[in-house]
Image (tube, rainbow, N blue to C red; front, side, top):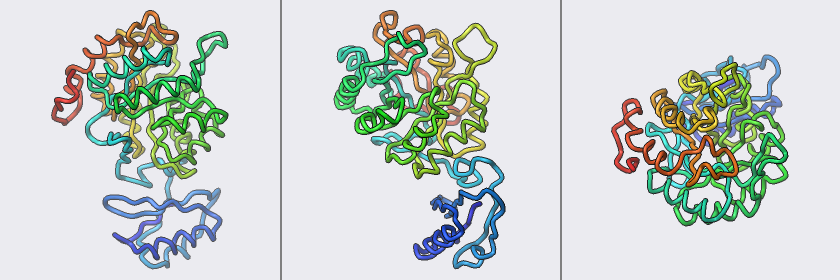
Amino acid sequence: MLILMKPSPTPEAVALVCRAVRELGLVPHPIPGVTRVAIGVTGNTGPVDETPIRGLPEVVDVIRVTKPYKLTSREMKPDDTVVVVGGVRIGEQRPVVVAGPCSVETREQTVETAKRVKAGGAQLLRGGAFKPRTSPYAFQGLGEKGLEILAEARDITGLPLVTEVIGVEVFEAVEAVTDILQIGARNMQNYPLLRRAGKSRKPVLLKRGQSATLEEFLLAAEYLLSEGNPNVILCERGIRTFSDHSRYTLDINIVPELKSLTHLPVLVDPSHASGKREMVVPLARAAFAAGADGVIVEVHPYPDKALSDGRQSLNLQLFADMMRGLERFVPNVEPEPALVA
């Protein structure tokens, strides 16, 4: 349910509506907007008597939200959500580029990569300290030592940091260091982790599970918003299909569909989608052309020696090549010199 208020309602009127919603055993979610102020309502499992709310001061209308996902829906919030991290605005017209190594291996490798992607035009740094791997024998990351190295790379370059949190047991350690919490595809439906991240004050980058439908993806994001975290970024990273020529299949169709259905920013991960570095650049261009709010790519100085995902990691030259001219694929946006390597 969505309660529409008069433009610029008084704080007292908003508080009165929120109190009335709570008295019904429901949860109010004030949603400020450019063209309207609304209060989203969640928690009902059946029809709700709207009469007491409709009669409250400064209430204009009460609208039923038909989607199973409520807070992520444009029915609740028609204006795009813009997530601001360290001066970088994610979700506006100009897409962003997140780049860095799959895993932190050494200080030299991480800092060198961070410096080079910054010089090439990346606005955010990615890197993994804790790595969930399919095989228990694969490199699992450096853990807290990796977080220290990432923090140093962030301090040297000034790039806001995106790193993955793999479970509630390491949540506080990652939260204390990173600027954006990443929840990976394997954890998209890890509900205790989603609830914990929803209580965080840090933005969350949520990756789509490899077999998740669009509705399941948005309902996973709903967990985050329902716990009070409005700063959620969605990331399409490829799904499992019968295709045998790439690691996954990039579902580029979901980008315009998500932009239509939800107000949340949408990124694309062409590295995991393809598993092949030669496919990353054209898929990044396709993501920009489809209207994504940015891409997240893996970069390594020496990909063939990488301890994880080297096959899909761009080397430094390929990253520079990707950045050069990438904005030609952005619809209706003038090129910005800062993004040219």
